[in-house]
Image 1 (tube, rainbow, N blue to C red):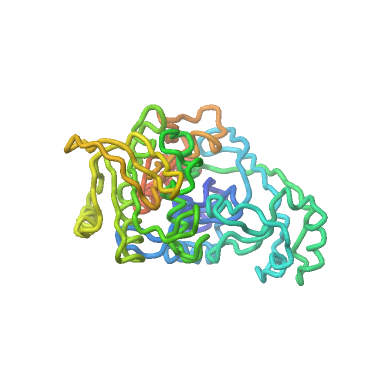
Image 2 (cartoon, one colour):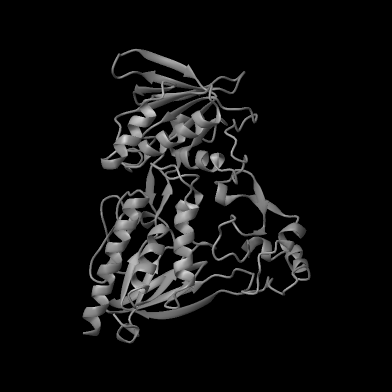
Length: 423
């Protein structure tokens, strides 16, 4: 469709992870204007936090960079970071969205030279690494950050040190006094792609996350395995920094359990298998144990499971462990439970235990659709209807491939709504 035909027909995409990026480029490349809104300082979402994809075990940076280039080269896509949709009124084809643009405290002049971060003395827990390690209060999150402009934490922006950094910047990009702004946008349709967050493992009291230093989660482990992560890619014990060579993965940690997260997130089994390859690759003398209820590796991923199963140093125990204890002398977590197949009880110590926590849709908590008639399923995923379409992990648990397919479909449905409104 020619650009002239699509003029004035804007599609609002909320969420800048792989789903939102895909939706935006698919709609824009056939002639529609897109407003892409992301609440964090950078695009990329959860995918940017991963070390590798399964089943090819390649870096996610390639796929993200391709989408970033498509966005940079398309004038129909308008980007807003640190922005939140506060309210949506109207109906399909004629919505009005009120959007709050929060301050970055660094303007468009920023070249990401890093002089401000070098001069900054204040450090905070690194949110990109799930609190592992420290990072400067003015920064960008990672080497692939897009846009590459730095940003400043709001609390830090109010300090005297932030004011002093103004003189440090060679291009005049730092503005500690920057204020939030609110705008209203007319859009024809909306794609909700706010993604997911890891389920809070501290809620699973018997497993001791937050109490035992050497009990971690799958997403924290993913950051640890990344060479740009908090340990430089070394798989170590948080308690003492020693190499972790005897590691247990506990599947369905809080998932498929009505006390916690009642549904299956579909990707956790494969994520643990992938992470088992990280351990076995880094430490040839390592041992991995995977505790599982049942294993889900659908379609083309079955061959990936068979590859991991072929490793004799990866042990599989059919069991949902009852609890995790800690050896006070060694700091070793001890997994306690019963093997479902043999009936044999076990108490096994490990260097590190990784909890495979599931996906909790952001739309169930902090990213609800601000529309009076928005609908959700029983788990908090957004139900498409009218001119609102959910995409990726806002619609159901999805891996990256499934999220891309879902987002392409959502882009087509959003375009159809725009066509009907115009016609």
